[in-house]
Length: 114
Length: 112
Image (tube, chains in turn orange, purple):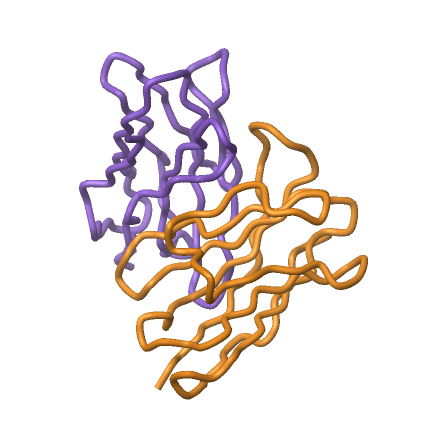
């Protein structure tokens, strides 16, 4: 069964460093999302992406964040200068169609900023 | 603003007992509702969804949920819990821009 994959599973970085989190969505899916979950808190929406453009972004998704689909398979989230409060589990999701459809989630990347 | 409330942070049930996990939502329009499950080290797996029609929806792993508009609720149920059901359960509503708004989750513990 096709699934969303994410690498790495755990990333440890120093404050101020850049990190890139990678996702491979399901191959025929066209809509991509990033969510994050700070330990003990809710899963929160960060950004949605379609047709090589950001469709929507949350208040969390400031200038330190960027997303890219560098080739036909990968979808990346970059944090330019990490802060302690960026420590969280980051989930990638994809869906085949727009609208009210199921989003398929990856296993997440746990980011720890020291 | 849209929101989802899961009032129970933890629930413990005995294996074989029935289960109900509560979810209340706040959303002005027709809600599109989801239940996801997260096992340790795993991603979020969809259990079931409600878009329209029959208010009792069946999902995977023997779960069902009932949409009650008058109570703004979408509670998840299972008649007989198995030890493998121990996980964290998230209720979510999809808003008009198709992003998911999650509740804070309920952690289910299963006693042998």
